[in-house]
Length: 235
Image 1 (cartoon, rainbow, N blue to C red):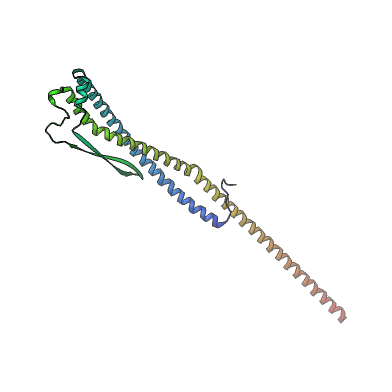
Image 2: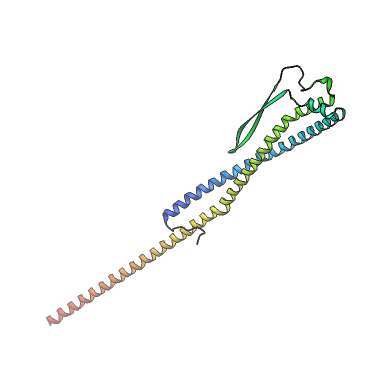
Protein backbone atom coordinates (compact mmCIF):
# COMPACT_ATOMS: atom_id res chain seq x y z
CA UNK A 1 0.00 0.00 0.00
CA UNK A 2 1.27 3.52 -0.77
CA UNK A 3 1.88 6.11 1.93
CA UNK A 4 -1.09 8.19 0.71
CA UNK A 5 -4.66 6.97 0.28
CA UNK A 6 -5.65 6.80 -3.39
CA UNK A 7 -8.42 5.26 -5.42
CA UNK A 8 -7.02 2.77 -7.97
CA UNK A 9 -8.81 4.32 -10.95
CA UNK A 10 -7.57 5.58 -14.28
CA UNK A 11 -8.80 9.09 -13.49
CA UNK A 12 -6.76 9.11 -10.29
CA UNK A 13 -3.76 7.75 -12.20
CA UNK A 14 -4.00 10.58 -14.75
CA UNK A 15 -4.32 13.16 -11.97
CA UNK A 16 -1.31 11.82 -10.10
CA UNK A 17 0.83 11.77 -13.24
CA UNK A 18 -0.04 15.43 -13.82
CA UNK A 19 0.85 16.28 -10.23
CA UNK A 20 4.12 14.37 -10.57
CA UNK A 21 5.10 16.33 -13.68
CA UNK A 22 4.30 19.60 -11.91
CA UNK A 23 6.23 18.55 -8.80
CA UNK A 24 9.25 17.54 -10.88
CA UNK A 25 9.31 20.89 -12.68
CA UNK A 26 8.88 22.72 -9.36
CA UNK A 27 11.70 20.67 -7.85
CA UNK A 28 14.06 21.63 -10.67
CA UNK A 29 13.11 25.33 -10.42
CA UNK A 30 13.57 25.32 -6.65
CA UNK A 31 16.98 23.67 -6.99
CA UNK A 32 18.03 26.33 -9.50
CA UNK A 33 16.73 29.03 -7.15
CA UNK A 34 18.61 27.50 -4.22
CA UNK A 35 21.86 27.37 -6.20
CA UNK A 36 21.50 31.00 -7.35
CA UNK A 37 20.66 32.11 -3.80
CA UNK A 38 23.77 30.33 -2.54
CA UNK A 39 25.85 32.13 -5.16
CA UNK A 40 24.40 35.52 -4.17
CA UNK A 41 24.84 34.67 -0.49
CA UNK A 42 28.52 33.76 -0.87
CA UNK A 43 29.20 36.99 -2.76
CA UNK A 44 27.42 38.96 -0.04
CA UNK A 45 29.39 37.19 2.69
CA UNK A 46 32.68 37.98 0.99
CA UNK A 47 31.68 41.64 0.62
CA UNK A 48 30.54 41.68 4.24
CA UNK A 49 33.91 40.37 5.39
CA UNK A 50 35.83 42.99 3.40
CA UNK A 51 33.63 45.90 4.54
CA UNK A 52 33.73 44.77 8.17
CA UNK A 53 37.53 44.75 8.06
CA UNK A 54 37.55 48.33 6.69
CA UNK A 55 35.02 49.50 9.30
CA UNK A 56 36.92 47.92 12.17
CA UNK A 57 40.17 49.46 10.95
CA UNK A 58 38.55 52.89 10.52
CA UNK A 59 36.89 52.77 13.96
CA UNK A 60 40.15 51.68 15.56
CA UNK A 61 41.97 54.63 14.04
CA UNK A 62 39.15 57.02 14.96
CA UNK A 63 39.12 55.77 18.57
CA UNK A 64 42.87 56.20 18.77
CA UNK A 65 42.53 59.76 17.48
CA UNK A 66 39.77 60.51 19.97
CA UNK A 67 41.90 59.07 22.77
CA UNK A 68 44.76 61.34 21.72
CA UNK A 69 42.40 64.34 21.60
CA UNK A 70 41.08 63.49 25.06
CA UNK A 71 44.61 63.44 26.38
CA UNK A 72 45.34 67.03 25.30
CA UNK A 73 41.84 68.51 25.81
CA UNK A 74 39.68 68.70 28.89
CA UNK A 75 36.47 66.60 28.90
CA UNK A 76 34.31 69.75 29.07
CA UNK A 77 36.05 71.34 26.09
CA UNK A 78 35.83 68.09 24.08
CA UNK A 79 32.11 67.68 24.83
CA UNK A 80 31.40 71.29 23.93
CA UNK A 81 33.34 71.00 20.66
CA UNK A 82 31.28 68.08 19.35
CA UNK A 83 27.95 68.94 20.98
CA UNK A 84 26.38 70.69 18.00
CA UNK A 85 27.20 69.09 14.63
CA UNK A 86 27.29 71.16 11.46
CA UNK A 87 26.01 68.33 9.26
CA UNK A 88 22.62 66.65 9.23
CA UNK A 89 21.98 63.27 7.67
CA UNK A 90 18.76 62.02 6.05
CA UNK A 91 18.43 58.29 5.46
CA UNK A 92 16.18 56.67 2.86
CA UNK A 93 15.51 52.95 2.60
CA UNK A 94 14.52 51.23 -0.63
CA UNK A 95 14.17 47.57 -1.54
CA UNK A 96 15.86 45.48 -4.20
CA UNK A 97 14.50 42.12 -5.32
CA UNK A 98 17.04 39.29 -5.40
CA UNK A 99 15.47 35.96 -6.40
CA UNK A 100 12.09 36.95 -4.87
CA UNK A 101 13.79 38.27 -1.71
CA UNK A 102 13.35 41.98 -0.94
CA UNK A 103 16.63 43.22 0.50
CA UNK A 104 17.13 46.77 1.82
CA UNK A 105 19.14 49.44 0.06
CA UNK A 106 20.13 52.43 2.21
CA UNK A 107 20.74 55.87 0.74
CA UNK A 108 21.70 58.91 2.77
CA UNK A 109 22.31 62.57 2.06
CA UNK A 110 24.22 65.08 4.15
CA UNK A 111 23.49 68.77 4.41
CA UNK A 112 25.94 71.25 5.95
CA UNK A 113 25.22 74.53 7.68
CA UNK A 114 26.59 77.70 6.17
CA UNK A 115 30.21 78.58 6.79
CA UNK A 116 33.68 77.70 5.63
CA UNK A 117 34.52 75.46 8.57
CA UNK A 118 33.28 71.88 7.93
CA UNK A 119 33.91 70.92 11.56
CA UNK A 120 31.40 71.74 14.33
CA UNK A 121 33.95 73.64 16.40
CA UNK A 122 36.58 76.32 16.17
CA UNK A 123 40.08 75.27 15.16
CA UNK A 124 41.59 77.71 17.64
CA UNK A 125 40.17 75.95 20.71
CA UNK A 126 40.70 72.31 19.70
CA UNK A 127 43.57 70.00 18.87
CA UNK A 128 44.56 68.49 15.55
CA UNK A 129 43.88 65.00 16.90
CA UNK A 130 40.17 65.88 17.17
CA UNK A 131 40.17 67.03 13.55
CA UNK A 132 41.66 63.69 12.51
CA UNK A 133 39.13 61.74 14.58
CA UNK A 134 36.17 63.61 13.07
CA UNK A 135 37.56 63.12 9.57
CA UNK A 136 38.09 59.37 10.13
CA UNK A 137 34.56 58.94 11.46
CA UNK A 138 33.17 60.81 8.47
CA UNK A 139 35.04 58.47 6.13
CA UNK A 140 33.93 55.29 7.92
CA UNK A 141 30.27 56.30 8.08
CA UNK A 142 29.58 55.25 4.47
CA UNK A 143 31.17 51.86 5.06
CA UNK A 144 29.13 51.40 8.26
CA UNK A 145 25.92 52.05 6.37
CA UNK A 146 26.92 49.65 3.62
CA UNK A 147 27.88 47.06 6.25
CA UNK A 148 24.41 47.27 7.81
CA UNK A 149 22.86 46.83 4.36
CA UNK A 150 25.05 43.82 3.50
CA UNK A 151 24.51 42.11 6.85
CA UNK A 152 20.74 42.45 6.59
CA UNK A 153 20.90 41.11 3.04
CA UNK A 154 22.91 38.12 4.27
CA UNK A 155 20.33 37.37 6.97
CA UNK A 156 17.41 37.55 4.52
CA UNK A 157 19.20 35.41 1.93
CA UNK A 158 20.13 32.83 4.56
CA UNK A 159 16.50 32.58 5.67
CA UNK A 160 15.27 32.18 2.10
CA UNK A 161 17.96 29.55 1.38
CA UNK A 162 16.79 27.54 4.39
CA UNK A 163 13.13 27.71 3.32
CA UNK A 164 14.02 26.75 -0.26
CA UNK A 165 16.20 23.88 0.95
CA UNK A 166 13.35 22.50 3.06
CA UNK A 167 10.98 22.68 0.10
CA UNK A 168 13.49 20.96 -2.18
CA UNK A 169 14.03 18.17 0.35
CA UNK A 170 10.28 17.78 0.92
CA UNK A 171 9.69 17.35 -2.79
CA UNK A 172 12.73 15.16 -3.40
CA UNK A 173 12.42 12.80 -0.43
CA UNK A 174 8.70 12.89 0.46
CA UNK A 175 6.23 14.18 -2.12
CA UNK A 176 7.73 12.85 -5.35
CA UNK A 177 8.49 9.34 -3.93
CA UNK A 178 4.95 9.17 -2.49
CA UNK A 179 3.40 10.06 -5.84
CA UNK A 180 5.64 7.61 -7.69
CA UNK A 181 4.69 4.87 -5.23
CA UNK A 182 0.99 5.71 -5.61
CA UNK A 183 1.28 5.68 -9.41
CA UNK A 184 3.04 2.30 -9.28
CA UNK A 185 0.35 0.95 -6.93
CA UNK A 186 -2.50 2.16 -9.14
CA UNK A 187 -0.82 0.80 -12.27
CA UNK A 188 -0.37 -2.58 -10.62
CA UNK A 189 -4.00 -2.61 -9.44
CA UNK A 190 -5.26 -1.66 -12.90
CA UNK A 191 -3.11 -4.35 -14.51
CA UNK A 192 -4.38 -6.86 -11.95
CA UNK A 193 -7.98 -5.83 -12.61
CA UNK A 194 -7.38 -6.09 -16.34
CA UNK A 195 -5.91 -9.58 -15.98
CA UNK A 196 -8.82 -10.59 -13.75
CA UNK A 197 -11.29 -9.27 -16.29
CA UNK A 198 -9.49 -11.14 -19.07
CA UNK A 199 -9.57 -14.36 -17.06
CA UNK A 200 -13.26 -13.89 -16.34
CA UNK A 201 -13.94 -13.29 -20.01
CA UNK A 202 -12.01 -16.42 -20.93
CA UNK A 203 -13.96 -18.45 -18.37
CA UNK A 204 -17.26 -17.05 -19.64
CA UNK A 205 -16.17 -17.87 -23.17
CA UNK A 206 -15.29 -21.43 -22.13
CA UNK A 207 -18.63 -21.79 -20.38
CA UNK A 208 -20.51 -20.50 -23.44
CA UNK A 209 -18.48 -22.81 -25.68
CA UNK A 210 -19.17 -25.81 -23.44
CA UNK A 211 -22.87 -24.99 -23.37
CA UNK A 212 -22.89 -24.66 -27.15
CA UNK A 213 -21.09 -28.00 -27.55
CA UNK A 214 -23.45 -29.63 -25.06
CA UNK A 215 -26.47 -28.20 -26.86
CA UNK A 216 -25.04 -29.40 -30.16
CA UNK A 217 -24.46 -32.87 -28.76
CA UNK A 218 -27.98 -33.00 -27.35
CA UNK A 219 -29.36 -31.85 -30.67
CA UNK A 220 -27.36 -34.50 -32.50
CA UNK A 221 -28.55 -37.16 -30.04
CA UNK A 222 -32.14 -36.10 -30.50
CA UNK A 223 -31.70 -36.22 -34.27
CA UNK A 224 -30.24 -39.73 -34.07
CA UNK A 225 -33.10 -40.92 -31.86
CA UNK A 226 -35.66 -39.41 -34.22
CA UNK A 227 -33.98 -41.09 -37.18
CA UNK A 228 -33.86 -44.48 -35.46
CA UNK A 229 -37.49 -44.16 -34.38
CA UNK A 230 -38.51 -43.32 -37.96
CA UNK A 231 -36.64 -46.37 -39.29
CA UNK A 232 -38.26 -48.69 -36.73
CA UNK A 233 -41.70 -47.48 -37.69
CA UNK A 234 -40.97 -48.16 -41.36
CA UNK A 235 -39.96 -51.71 -40.58
